[in-house]
Length: 116
Image 1: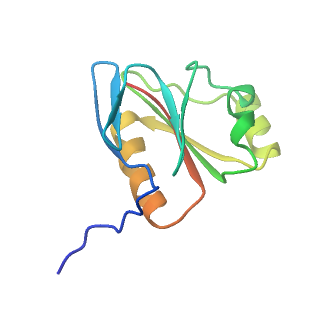
Image 2: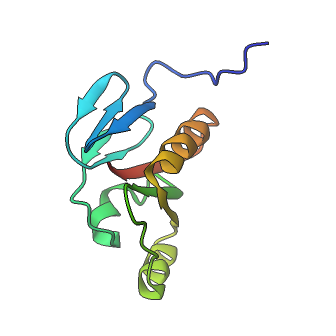
């Protein structure tokens, strides 16, 4: 039985991350990026609502994936994201990539901000 998720042609999939670069749908990005099912945008690496304003009407879930030490969101950061209607999870980059791919395959409105 084939259990691979069905990937639409216009759907991004995160294939790998290594030494500061990301491979997304066959394209290598050498900078932090925000990935949605159909877009890849540059990301400053800053974790605040202003960095994600462009997406707030297009997504429900924001995954933030970082290499190295993963900081916790402050209560003020959590409150500002919640007030904007975004569920935010910050995690290791590997977990963020895998979670993004699964949620996107399920058709969920998700974005991943990734810094390898």
